Length: 295
Image (cartoon, rainbow, N blue to C red):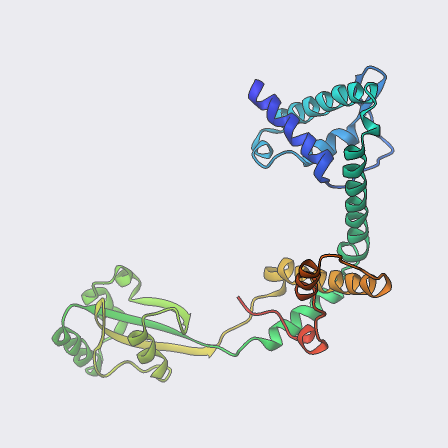
């Protein structure tokens, strides 16, 4: 319990010094505790809970509530003593506080003009742009029969030529674990199978099977291609969060470039200035229009 209390205190100190989500203001914001004449409201407790260390976030809700409140109380008690000593006038404290204020203003501006400014229409448009730029891929639906020797594979091909069903032969003769499914491999694109297998499968027409055994590191295969089709792109709802991140990135860069154009930045150290300028080169219109690389 002592360790949990220490972790909670450290976590909340980190919230105060490193920033966190904006405190929710609610008409119904009850007081949950009093520390001397200071009130701790539910909104402040919610902020502390949401900003706990990731490890503490795994605790049950009631324990998170206790950990967060313990952190608030510890911080406020020592903050009271710090004020009594006049530490709010300490130059280092003022410098850190100024930086924190600037960063929180940055975060508030970012939320207003980037996060909250993204519209469903923008996400859909960016999704369509990304999909249009994806390379066209073909996928095949195949079955296979895996045996140990070339002669066994040739015998399977002979039975297929004689009219025996591929699925039945797979169940009967294949050594692959999927034999119970008739050797069904489902749909796959290039790059998913070993090269020898892939080359043979994609060279077949729909409905055809290999007329010679295909040797791989696993043995000898007889392959049947049941279908070929263009690979369907992921649906918007499957990648919406990733696409939203791309839109947010573009908005953020636009906001930053506008701010940089309006306010001069002078860096005294020549090496640091060169490194900053290199790291923050403006993106060309051509590069900005390029879709993000597909994963």
